[in-house]
Figure 1 (cartoon, rainbow, N blue to C red):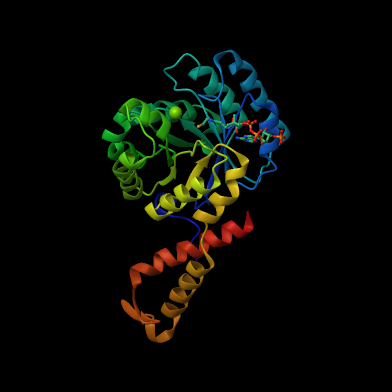
Figure 2 (cartoon, rainbow, N blue to C red):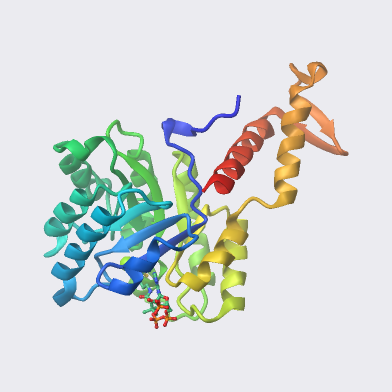
Length: 299
Ligand code: COA
Ligand code: MG
């Protein structure tokens, strides 16, 4: 049977392209529903100037009322609860009933736990999940604890998102490029995978540089990221292509599933397929790949 769920019963969702939309930008918010990205992060945090916070919250309330159903997974990024704007952002975002809230600048598990506790007090409790921005030096030091905390009953944690701009700033990396961030990002990927979380790569700032963007997507896909956060609609197609399951990978996955389904292989731990060794451990990943393809086609 093809399973539609992964570890910890977290639903499998395609997250190839995850577009930030500044909540204060009326045109961008309206446009978001028409775009072919897998997920949208409506931002109340850094993309919204302090003077525009009220208007941005109001816009999101109206937007979610007008579009009760969306083709995308919808996430709202709030300011940290401990910050000036956090509590009001939380109330506004919760009222929208998005699929998830994205918590910025997570340093320790408690930063997510506080939001989970507040969600648990309301009716929306059953549906709203949590995503965490990994963008501070402390998040790197505490990555394993933060990801492991996602296994706590009621944690709601589904996904980590890398914030490379903040991280580079806090580490005082002069740039350009992100070679110095690579080992840290691999550490975050290990933490996510150890505890069954998805993990999404950082944004690529130069949104008109298609070649540079494609190269960074290819690198991130090779590292095992589930997708990339995006800042502009013109980045969606490239991310969907880079993080989507290729026809070749789909064919290989289908062949593996078919091979283990043959009566003579039912109990085999390892088989030969087209001149390659395939172990039963590859079967689980093949099934996951096919389930992802079905979701990508459906959505
Ligand atoms: N989401 C939805 N629509 C967007 C968009 C986004 N992130 N970015 C641009 N658009 C829309 C514009 O509204 C414009 O729509 P129109 O054709 O109806 O006029 C169209 O795409 C073309 O935009 P363009 O003129 O090329 O870009 P811009 O100069 O207006 O905006 C940015 C450039 C970077 C300011 C803008 O893309 C943006 O705000 N991105 C998100 C930033 C963000 O959220 N940062 C926080 C997380 S890192
Ligand atoms: Mg940030």
